[in-house]
Length: 141
Image (cartoon, rainbow, N blue to C red):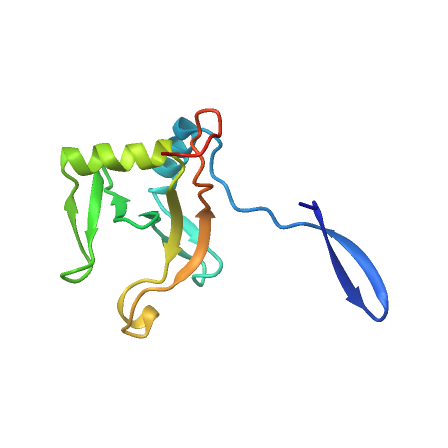
């Protein structure tokens, strides 16, 4: 895999650095600390310079957020956009997914008007999961 990409304009080729996947941390602990810090709000240019709060999306799983006190909450997408405190089992499963680097951290459009009264859209990806375990960067089970 190359670390450069090519751009051609007016018959001139320019080597550009390849875009890297956005990463908030390279260990489960550093990612968790970055998530907790971001849960106080992130100013997003893509969101019109509004303060947005990250959504934690488990690959092929549930969506979570952190409360103001740092408690993990499950986003209840089946019955609207409410949140409920994650059960101990859900929190344990989330942290196993976090350890396996299977959690994507995104900023979404706000529900309602900002989302044209439809599904929320991703404005910015803050952490793109590798699907590889942080422990030795081996394939997660």
